[in-house]
Amino acid sequence: MKLSQNGWVVIAGLGPGNEALVTQEVRDAIDEATDIVGYIPYVKRIVPREGLTLHATDNRVEVDRATHALEMAAEGKRVVVVSSGDPGVFAMASAVFEALENNAESRPEWLDLEIKVLPGITAMLAAAAAIGAPLGHDFAAINLSDNLKPWSLIEKRLQLVGEAGLAMAFYNPRSKSRPHQFARALEILREACGAETLITFARDVTKPGQELLTVPLKDATPEMADMRTVVIVGNRDTRRVGNYVYTPRYAAEA
Image 1 (cartoon, one colour):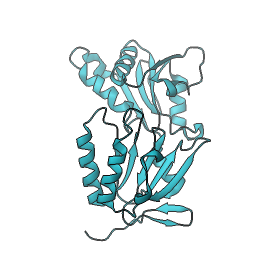
Image 2 (cartoon, helix red, strand yellow; image 1 turned 45 degrees about the horizontal axis):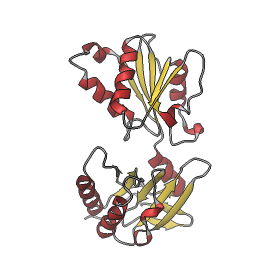
Image 3 (cartoon, rainbow, N blue to C red; image 1 turned 180 degrees about the vertical axis):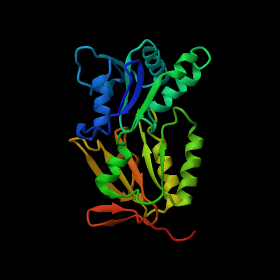
């Protein structure tokens, strides 16, 4: 990847947690950076060095964080905005472009900044790989947090995607502030997908404490998930083979 010597913003994915899964392209950008911006746990993954300033902020200030990155780039700094997984999947890439749009009239010069998005391995794909190939056919990724969208919309999407016969991957399934919503999600999934459909709970995927649990939807309980868990629900054709779970590449006509 070639970057100019002027100010720029790179939005980089750090992968699901195992440092071996960080791409070389991301490592090179971090080596060139003067400033790192991101959520506190992700910035902690960056090794401090002379000439590098770390800007760690809380989790719910994404647009403020993105605006700060653009401001620094406009001043000539080389800024890397870090996300876990892939920055374009429920992460900071969208926030940076939102901040760019919000300031397009007041800071039109920002539209000329060099901005690059560097992909990373998502927790969803890392979890799928750990259990086999549950996303081997059409699938949908859904964030179950209702911080940025109403829960009623999430319920509707679960119902429609389940009825459409797609496998699903869920981010942010259950937290201390919303412990009961995932129980409702499981009810919808049993009705839409069938009680025998396989569901996998992948906790701390790629990390030393990784835990994988696959059960039929009828046996799934809300307590099996937390904010460190990626949940993957197969379609009606998803099956076990030995110790693995996979979804066939083909589907019958509806």
